[in-house]
Structures are given as structure tokens and as C-alpha cells.
Length: 275
Length: 275
DNA sequence: CGAAATATTGACAATGATCAACTCTTGTGG
DNA sequence: CCACAAGAGTTGATCATTGTCAATATTTCG
Image (tube, rainbow over all chains, first blue to last red; front, side):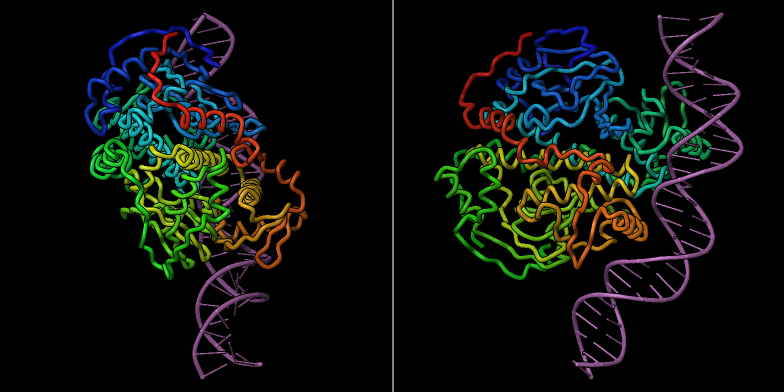
């Protein structure tokens, strides 16, 4: 584990990125800020191809990614690889594995990555004592599940052309939400083989699909940067909808819901659900 | 919503199936039993093709399925359908949607179904007051995510023959865990079209794949009952592993983990994570 | 500069989709 | 209880998407 960890730093300031993550629902009070700062004091730096979580290996650390790309994948015994999801800044890693022992995926960095490393035991404590933090984590976990459902649809019912378009749009939205993409362009530090292992396609076909999108002036690539030249058309091709990614959908029900239910739901006695 | 709800019953006894679900980690005490009984007092009966959860529609009820099959799916705008997962007895439905407002899937019953209907607001209360219940729900949610990851691999990196084998094995294990399957056979109340929409295949190809499995004496079908005639070989074909489904993997880390972390983690002050 | 990784392209093969019957089962009304 | 309609299952023929193989650029990096 932790291959490629080259540096551990300590810092008592809560980075703006992290703060934003937890203030999704409501501003943090002084106590909450302090707790988070303490929790995030331990930062790790991971090299590309580090494996902070390895399939079949117990893990006791939860990471909150600060910068860098990663991926979660599973291998078949004959070597076929399927990437379950990309890991981007703001994402949690290892929550399920360290809390439930269900570790059947490997997490590997694609680029140099920095992350906060949190002992998993503390996370559960926080769920009880700091509902706002619990809300952020739960939200994150629900969002993850929604992304996986979209991925299932992408793999099951879209062809290569649609899959690629859909993925690029999703990455754009995710990266924008993390402040890492412009209006229509972002850095894509990923090989075509990796894209193939995510989209369930061969490298060759990934290459052809990208070429087609390029020829149709839907995308452009220069260096590692990818531009979506006609987002509306891509969205039509991919049948794309961006519900859970969109920050605007977060507040209404979620804030009203989680905040109310978790934070202020005091020792109210349980009511029997009568019809 | 709730098309097809024909009956609502009340009963104060906690059914054995539900009890088992919540005693996965540790026996329930009297208080917990009482709370659950109250919570589960409201039962609904759903006809086939009822839609307790509809994409894009807010939902305020969480269901815990007692009997019957269902499915969660998404539609593309041109009508293509992808089933994200089957819903079986013991599964929760609508947790994410009612708690987070992220409702982008439709849940539909495949057979007549009975379920406990729980107002979602109460679920969050329970998380705080009854850790054992929270543990069961969280576990369930983590298991769901693990199943979805497996489905992603199935769709992305397995061919039709492997996919079908893998699905049948997974259903066997899930149904066995719910006490609804024998050593190697179970009722499969599902059309080939439904199987296709789950596996990302056309009806025709589902038919051919099943025929092949039949011809190779790997499965047998009579009426709605399906028998796996050579589980070892099917597992080899599908590269099947049954980690999260297996009851035996539940106790060690999970029980020790969740129980300790949630139930007994009192007001212990947060320790700063120093290296 | 040279090796290794990555990208690109063509030729061909294979998996799976589509189309179009046709059969079998199931349920319903007369 | 039968006839019939609708749904589900089955099969062959053909087409399309995507994979595999192999060769050749091109880029990256020590």
C-alpha cells in the first residue's frame, strides 16, 4: 500500500477546496472548521501509479483528494481491466473499503496527487458529532452512486461514439465543479488505453472514435488539453443530462433535507408511521 | 406515484426477514425491536409494473422490500432502456432519492411485491438514535455500490456468454442470501427482454445465449425455474467471485468495524491525526 | 539520441444487432 | 371449454459495430 508516497506534510489551514466541499450545505461554524482542520492536517503526496487502495487488502485510511487524477478499477483474471470511475479533486477514496471491508477495487493515481489522509475510525465519529460533515460525506457517496448508474447506462446502451461524447461531457462538468475546467476545455491527462478501459472499448476503437469527433469538429486536442467545440451537439449525441453534477440542484431538497433531518433533528421521539 | 398500490396493511410484528436484515451485525435489543416494528407497521402491496419511484419525481418514502422482484432502470430519450439493478427482498428502495433528491432512476416492480414503507424523514433520525439500524442501512448501501461496480465490469469487459453466466450466479447468491433459492436453482420471473435490458444485449442475443448455456448443460429451465447445473464451470466462465454477497464476509471487519465505530463510539474527543 | 510508451492506420474477423418470420404460451371473452 | 389475441420465445439470414492483428508514426523521457 501507499506505494509512491513520497511526502507527508502538515498544515493547519483548511484549504479553500476542502472548505467548499463541506460548505455545500451550509457555512461551517468555528468548531466544525477546527475539527476539519485537525482532520486534514495530514496530507500525502502520491506519485503517478501509486495504489493507495488495493483490491483484497484492508485499508484504514480515507482520502479526500485535493489535486490530481486517479481511477478505481477491477481486473478480470485474464487481465482485462475495467475502470469503474475516475477520481478527481474533491472526491473521497476508500470510504467504503475502510468502513465496510468491502474492498474489491483498486485505486490508482494517474497523475501526481495530493490528498488529505484521514484515519477511517475518525470518520464514523464525525458522523455522530458533526452532522454537516456527515452530510457532505453522504452526499458524496450518493453522487458517486449516481455516477456509477450513469456509467452502467453508458456501457450497456450507448455505442462507442455516444459513450465517448458522454464521458467527455461528464468530465467537463465534474472538472468545472472542481474549478479545473474552462467553459469548454480541460486537461485530460489520460491515455487512450485508459479511456478504453473506462468505456469498455479497445484502444484502437477509442482512437477512431476520437478521430471521428475531431473530424466532425466536435472536439479538438492539443497537448493534453481537450476542447469541446460544440457542446450542444455533443449533448444531443450523448443524450446527456447533468443532474447530480450540477451544483444548482444541490441546495433545494438536499440542503433543506439533510440539514434539517440530520443537523437539527434533535432527540425527537420516533413517530409511528400510521397511514 | 404508487400506481398499483392496492392494499396497505398494518402489523406490529417484525417479520423474520426484516429482523435478519438488521441483526446482521448484532442481535437487536428490545428498544430497537420496538422501533423497527413501529417503523415497519405500514406495509404496501404493489402490483406488477407499479412504479414506487419515478425518475424526476420527488419521493418521500423509503421502501424495504419484503417479497417480490423489481428493477431500477434509466431510459434514453429514444427509448433504449438500461436496468441498473434488480431489486430483491431485503433491498432498500428510494434511500438515495428521498434523502438526496438525486432521483434519476425509475423503480418498477416485476412481480407482485410487498414492502415496508418508511417516511424518509424518520430514517435520518434513526441514524442518530439507533446505530445498529444505521449500520444495516449503510451496509446495504455499500453493498449496492459494490454490486453496481460489478455490473460495470460485466457490461464493460465481458461478452454475452460471460455476462449471462455472471448474472445467473449473482442472482443465485443474492436469492440464497434472502432464503429464496435452493442449492442451485431459483425462480426467475423475468422475460428475456428484461434480461437483455439488464445485460446490455438484444432479446435475440439473450435467447441465443441462454440456448447455448442450455445446450452445454450449464443451465436448465422449466416453467419459471432456472437451475445452474454446473456452478463451478459457470464461475470459471464468468470469472465470478462472490465477496460482498457472501454472508461469511460480513462479520469480521464489518461487525467489529461498524459496531465499534458507530455503536460504542461515545463522545470520545476527536484526536488529531498526526503522522 | 534511442528506447519505450503512446498514437494511428489498414485489413480482416467476430461478436452482437436488426429484420423477419414463425411457434408457443397465456389469458380472456364468448 | 374453445378460439383468439397478445405477449413471449425461437430461429435463420444478414448487417453493423467493434475487436484483433500488424505495421508504422509520433511523442516522451532518461
